[in-house]
Amino acid sequence: MLPLHRILCVLLFGSCVSGASAATQDLDTGKVKVIYLDARKTVLREVGTLPKILKEASGLTYTDARHFWSHNDDGIPALYCLDSVGNQLKAVQLNIQNRGWEDLAQDQVGNVYIGGFGNNKNDKKELRIYKVKDLEGVNTAMVQPEIIAYKYRDQNEFPPPPTKKNFDVDGFIAYRDVLLLFTKNRTSPFTGYSKIYRLSQQPGEQVAEVMDSLFVGKGPMMNNWITGAAISPDQNTIALLFHNRIWLIRNFRENKISAGTIYQIDLHHYSHKAGISFKGNDMLYIVDELELDLIGGKLYAVDLKPFIKQFKAN
Image (cartoon, rainbow, N blue to C red):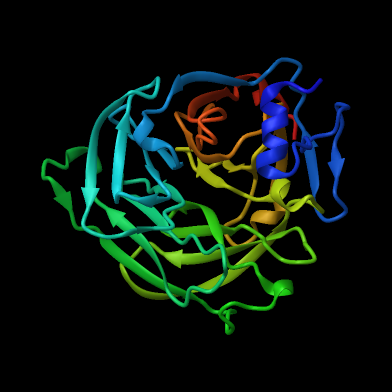
């Protein structure tokens, strides 16, 4: 009989298929080569339980003050400060609405960006990213963030036909002086491509330009959704989060992420994982949403140090 968490994830998500091969070998999708990192032991370690107010934890970032920050993807427009085991330390409310907040990113000078780009129906004509300066130093009851309002250059129909539904985003990063957004592909039939858009980090009205695309898998669709993204402090490693695995991309160029070296770590765990962040250059933390009060609502850690030698070999 299947364990309870696998039975429930089939009911919730329709599938719990692992994203990695059972063998320790390189995976070749036919579009990109993915190097499977050998994980002989369970790499996903539960380190804490999230507060009940973060039932739909969606984004995650780690600051120099040694705090994690997260948020829900709808409802109260607040960022919640957490310690290393998920306990809530404080909250900062923003003077905006929370409609489809999906991820957090942080630039190299400490500005935090909230991705208000959730677009399940692919029908939003204008989306938002919110920029908060000195989040750790906030001492007021409410913060007014700066706003990046943007549209997609290549979208002309709202919603587009099923074959073109690739304008939903769940993950983004701040790289150098730009923001890179990774789409959550909802096409039917499923094409398996995540488009990568580029925006400036400057507030104001913008148009998001496609700079690259990344083939993430043939299906099932939900197993190949990018649900969060992060970049290491040294800017050398991009982490892309899926429900059941992580992709690490190294040796990339800003305008050609797909040409980088791509590694896969199978988490041997399926849940609605929705936020990922680096803590240093060799440790990742993940949050997942609480489903049916039974699955998720946790803070997890993934130690990358055992894989460093494999990075250097490629």
